[in-house]
Length: 246
Ligand SMILES: Nc1ncnc2c1ncn2[C@@H]1O[C@H](COP(=O)(O)OP(=O)(O)OP(=O)(O)O)[C@@H](O)[C@H]1O
Image 1 (tube, rainbow, N blue to C red):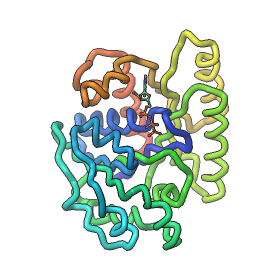
Image 2 (image 1 turned 90 degrees about the horizontal axis):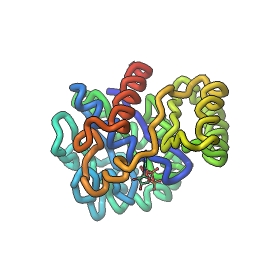
Image 3 (image 1 turned 90 degrees about the vertical axis):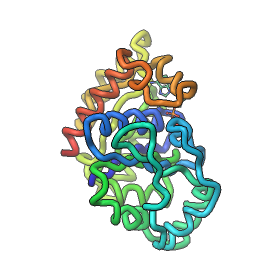
Image 4 (image 1 turned 180 degrees about the vertical axis):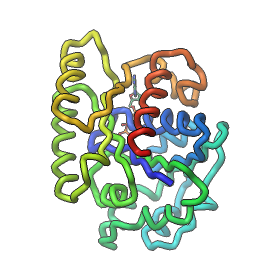
């Protein structure tokens, strides 16, 4: 079982869009796939038409006692399950901070190792104690970045943090999201970012109204717009990530 965290310090960069669409691609390729919606905003759960839990999940995980198995729900798609968000995750960080443990997520996921090929963690925007747990559990960090100066600056800050924790660049999988090729800055970043960061994925996700429509359709892009450029881009991105993480 490979664990992939969709993570960024910044909000609104396309983490949930990536989690939903990459998980759909993995499941479509036949991999037994689980998405864990760690964000109390519960957008991933919304896209998969599953109600978030109201309470209770976070504390048990922090104490190392929660069985995740009975919280998992099936989705409308083959091979694709979801662990819905839980509003108690709002307190996750403070609770994890109090224990000073960074292995809680990894420990909670361990019993699922024989059930899934891939687990996607859709993370809230932060750099926190929860992030430390995510980094300890994940084989790869999938990091969506807007092609803007501030977004790239935040990536450098994240890299310094990962360097301090000796998380190898090989485990970092940054890619550009919401690319608008009409913008000179975006075209420039498409050239400069991979030149400066060898770990960068070659596939980027275009800015697309089809991705925005996910909220209306409540489904991954390829399920309702299979021939769109965005659907092709997520499929290519998944191929690249699957190759990188083996
Ligand atoms: N490729 C895209 N093209 C156009 N709109 C996009 C694209 N990707 C995401 N969006 C839109 O941008 C907004 C933020 O996207 P998303 O929720 O995936 O980001 P996020 O990083 O998960 O946000 P948060 O940090 O709040 O969890 C949403 O309204 C989404 O529909």
